[in-house]
Amino acid sequence: MHPAIEVPFTDLSAMAREVWPDIEQTYIEALLSARYVGGPAVARFEENFARYCEATHAVGVANGTDALQLTLQALGLGPGDEVIVPSNTFIATAAAVVRAGAVPAFVDVDPGSLLITPAILAAAITPRTSAVIVVHLYGNMPDMDGLVAVAERAGIALVEDAAQAHGAEWRDSRAGSFGAAACFSFYPGKNLGAFGDAGAVVTNDPKIAERVRSLANHGRDGGANHYEHSFVGTNSRLDALQAIALDAKLARNEDWTEARISLADRYRKELAGSAIRLTEVDPLARHVYHLMVVRVADRAAIQQKLQENGIQTGVHYPVPCHLQPPLRQYASGPLPVCEQAATEQFSLPLFPHMSRAQVDRVCEVLDEAGVSR
Ligand SMILES: Cc1ncc(COP(=O)(O)O)c(C=O)c1O
Image (tube, rainbow, N blue to C red):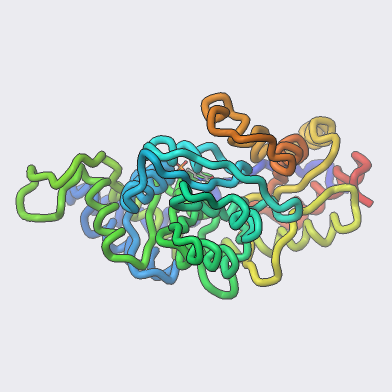
């Protein structure tokens, strides 16, 4: 028994405390240098993050939603284009499609992993399909060999939504190295999180990188004249202070990811054979556990019991995209796996500085609630 142990859902300040000694001096220098937007700190982080993702280019932007929208625009997608989107995702995946002027075509997900599969993608492609957004939800990755093959055969672009999947892998290759481009969020709660909003587009295609960079900087082409614009873009640039924090955190991301994986393994071992349903992970995938999502029939009661014992949980996500009021107009019918998962899934606490005793305490309370074994 560990009656005194309380378990927060996450602990972002522990990460901040760990990196602060590394960045304090650099922060002061950056503030005094007055290079607040873009500049050498951003260039350094972009280079390091591209390398981390095993890709050749990374372009820092303001957030993950912009990363998705700017990528679709850089691919030339807009009105008349349909983009296949798994409905079990955060609304930003689909909202970016709408904001780019294209139409989301929602598909269901695999009942085990809750991710898109090659068969689901193949069945959904129509003559109007221009692209698919493969979402590495929770930090897990689907069969990328199969998905890339289906997309290539159909001649459609594959974009990775890797907002939750920094460092995730499929067959030893990193998230960010498979599609035409991959879109990352550095929202503070993400595995690699800034001290505010930030994001990046990662790609091996220099033309896409250049186009995203220009779109994110008012359509400037990087030429000599600051006030000459090749086309209408937006302002979605990465700030130097965020890049400095991200660079320091990136250096620790493998350690933090290994900590997440080891805690998740402990949960999996403790909860195996219980009434709690764990999401399936393909042996070829490296799941980086942004979220420890599980499913139960009586979610509200279980969350309440955990809450009463000082254990915080979350729900990712309670409403699938095709049932969100502003997106219902794009739904073409029921998506039973997504709809069922939305009523059952919830996220247990999981963060790099979590202790094993905290994992054990969560499992103990789940046991008391009658869902473990
Ligand atoms: C799967 C997914 N896609 C896109 C986003 C959007 O990222 P951001 O919040 O940085 O705009 C998020 C994060 O919130 C996400 O979880």
